[in-house]
Length: 73
Image (cartoon, rainbow, N blue to C red; front, side):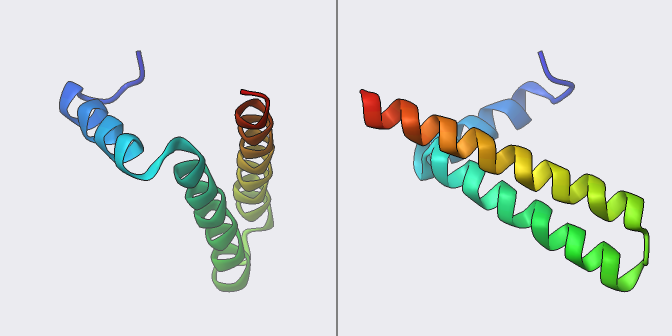
């Protein structure tokens, strides 16, 4: 189980139920990309910015796989 409280997990479940998993992953990908840009431009920390951009890419991949699964269903 993730290192989140039961309440936090319950709240995340409510968010996923309300907005749909695809939309949540899409938003997380966007947020990661925005964080990467912000860090690169304002903190000049290329390593951390790249790490956030990698997270965005991973989220995009997960989103494509989820969309493929939903298309097959």
